[in-house]
Length: 381
Image (cartoon, rainbow, N blue to C red; front, side):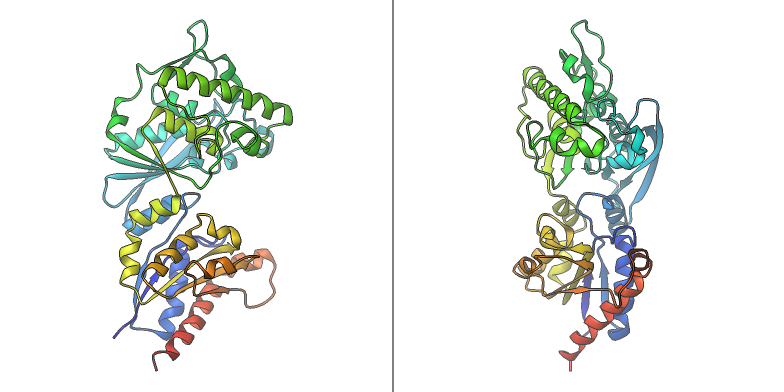
């Protein structure tokens, strides 16, 4: 009887996409089990690569859109995904409002905005979807999601009834939130926030203090941004009746988590769970003989919502052997064996520089997959 392998890796960042990792694994396995049934299930955890993973797994498509970048007068070509069912869109906020879109000298969370992310949400609604998954990692912003809400029709007014400028630096001037022109179609759409960040909106563990410095904020700016966020949260509570100040995950992406929770009926979910559910990973693993997963680097942090951890939990549930491949293995991987990993393999065959390792990723994954398969073949004798 032919064996069934489910291949569910994350991407190996800067080397291979999740789908390319699947292909390399498949080539290695087929050298030993040429008649095996191979099920490709490229994964992501809600961050970079989520669009590609869900499009590849569901035979979906990309929709390109010119939107505003993180700065007021900038424009970027971004895209989102429509899954194969044509009813679900997947958006990565970093495509429109990400830190990597700005040169180091231009990073300033006092003025950066999530407006472009709101434009992507609007474009997805115009495609007729009824569900939107939004990955909110890698932001250049600290505006509490006000830019996103503006793009969807909300107005943020000062004491004179005039709109305040974009960016977290101006939220102290906010006196009223006007939702009269907010896009009514959002009421017909389910929104799920994909994030493994649990930080609240304000305070020492909040958006400004924890993430502000990497977006260009000085110590003084961080303090100002946090005070502004606190004021913003108070206005949201007064005008919208939602207490989002200390919600877990509200501080993700410079408060975009809070904005989505405040202005929509969004639910916060672990990214790996959203991806797994949308590609029906559990059904695939249930019928598998062996499961392969992996990512560029694995250590004790993999347990905190990373794709291989989610895959191994499902493998454990159905008592399926689960093998993980990694470009780098760090400290504390022992905890992963308790959570369903059968074995974890480093793919490097020899000492290499980082550029060499990235370039040879496919070859190393193929060879390691073949070697694992040769061990598995012994049990078939």
